[in-house]
Image 1 (cartoon, rainbow, N blue to C red):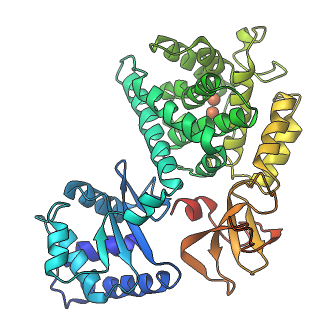
Image 2 (image 1 turned 60 degrees about the vertical axis):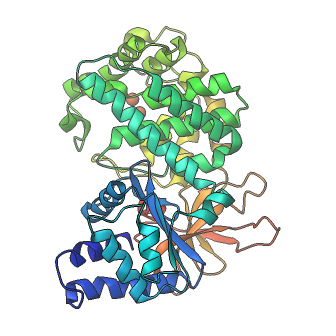
Image 3 (image 1 turned 90 degrees about the horizontal axis):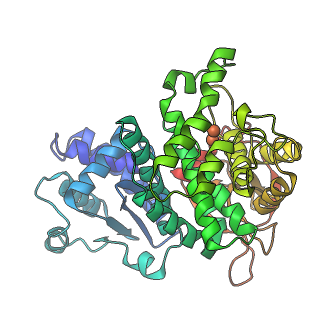
Length: 441
Ligand SMILES: [Fe+2]
Ligand SMILES: [Fe+2]
């Protein structure tokens, strides 16, 4: 839908309204809105912290079309647009025409809607915001964290010592969200971005480690340290050549030696940042040391590393295993959970590994499942009260068709009724499903 919207806006700026290049995407867009608005009253899209979102899907790494649309909305100061059931082709035509025009902005748009008789499109997402969509603040925190990590890395690249204010602010937000409900945050760790691996991986490790800290009942100050350590654990990779970071296949002995330097380099970088605690520096230094001390840096094997370093190691392993890299295909969450259990007592501290597996639940976030409605869904959020009834995103309908926008469903609703039950897990490769795409688009 985002692509259709963006190509409609683009074509309307170049061609007359009757031209096929304008009509075709607009007709497709109108048909799509009609289909989606059969199931819900309104659909909203807009910008959160400079990133385009459609419903609760955030476009972390958008294609050209969507990023052009995002830029246009940012320039016009438009935060969000809501399209209501009953929207007509003409109303959508007016909307894309207005978005294509230079003079349109958030201030004059409501007046233009009024004069053109547009009643089914409005600025903002009043209803959703007032009801408090639980996912929007988390998405914003995720994006803030990406910006903060990339900001720190850019500063280091430019030879400066990064400040810790932005990281601290992000950590404050993340910790308060996690204390409220860490299970929503876990779903965000499904956001994977092949091109910006280190940034996304850092944020994901921060989230998974923080969630494990909450699951262990740790206090807010310790949670802050855990999240900061997760966000900064691979900061030393900034000094490693990108071709080495992305090298397919096995590294040569020499290349591995270079790669191994990132933990001590990172610890040194972090130690220069003002207000970063000793525990964070230790965790950055020790995240590859392994529980059995067979890891690196070799010179630090006899040092005492605390529990935070062990927590980061568990989260780091899990995110790396479930992410596509040039040198490995991602494991499904179920397989990764089994691998975490196998590493307990050797690479990972056994109690923490087991607690992590317990936290992820029977159907770990990102698992593809078949429901008794014959739909296929991705697990988005564990349900501690009922391990059989997580929150899911339905991605394939009972007839086997992919939904253009995946639909979120609570398998166990708040009124106690069931939407559906899980029948089995499904191999994403068999269904040719890209889990990340399902969750982030
Ligand atoms: Fe690392
Ligand atoms: Fe890592």
